[in-house]
Length: 216
Ligand SMILES: [Zn+2]
Image (cartoon, rainbow, N blue to C red; front, side, top):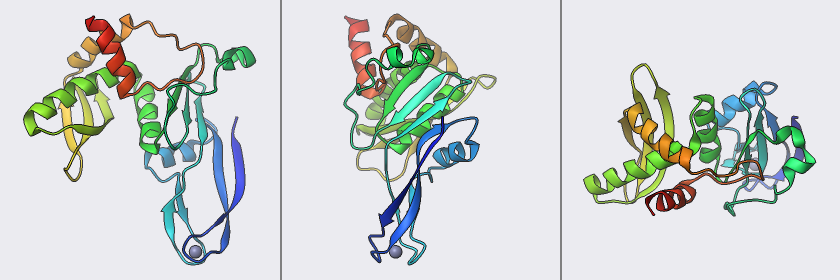
């Protein structure tokens, strides 16, 4: 279900109110152009028609890919881990088998699309990122602030990421073998977490917890 909200935003530059379209609900097959905007990171760009002032304007939105069976709920300003989506499956039984994820940044939203569209398991990807951040820490002596999945190529046996390290400008790109992903996929498979409830954040912290339990 696509949901569009029209809202008057006051331009911080010239104080003119400009009518802006907000995509509160996005459906993958009905809004391919919006999917593109998520992927090229322009969905939340605001540009004032009067003075040309541009900025990023973040608002909550729900992305649904019915064919691939996943939903990603973007809520700016932090992820509580699990949102008020509790009981959503009782209200919408048709969503019971759908993967539901909560993300708190546009980059996180984009990443989930890339992961699920590539047919990958997002927990396994998070676990792999943890392992790669450890390697980067050894190599550069720096902590990883963020890491994002970029692509997977089964034929070439490659999976690519970009990492942002503290105190370094620009991303560090890293490619590893899909074999490494297969290993983290095994761990992810043992972490029988229930995806049937509300929206959950399968992020770095979630992966750390899973890893701690696995090692215990
Ligand atoms: Zn303006």
